[in-house]
Length: 101
Image (cartoon, rainbow, N blue to C red; front, side, top):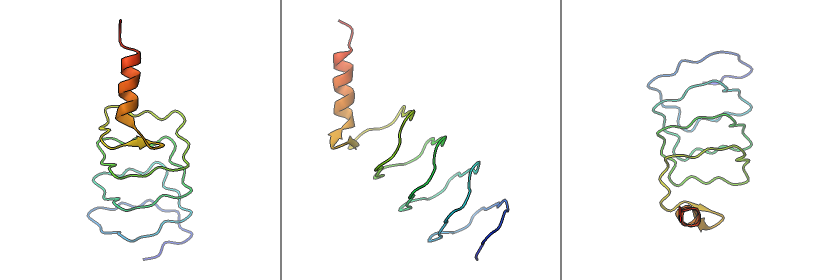
C-alpha cells in the first residue's frame, strides 16, 4: 500500500509493516506500544521530546547526535560505552570522587 501526499490518522493494530519505508513523514504525537523496531534505522530525524520507557535498546548505536538535555535514569549499562569508555567505569569514578568523606 502506498500513502503519498496524505494527511490521515492511522489506527494500526496487529499489523506486520516490516520492511516499510517512511520518508519525509510527520509522525509527531504518535504512540508506539509493543512495537518491534529491531534493525530499524533513523537517519536525519527529529526525535526531540521522545519518552522511552521499558524499552530494549541493547546493541543500539547513536552517532553524531545532539543529546543536550537528555536524561538517562534507571538504565542497565553493561557493555555500554561513550567514545570507547565503559559507562559503568565513568559512573564508578564519579561516585568514588563524590563519595562522602
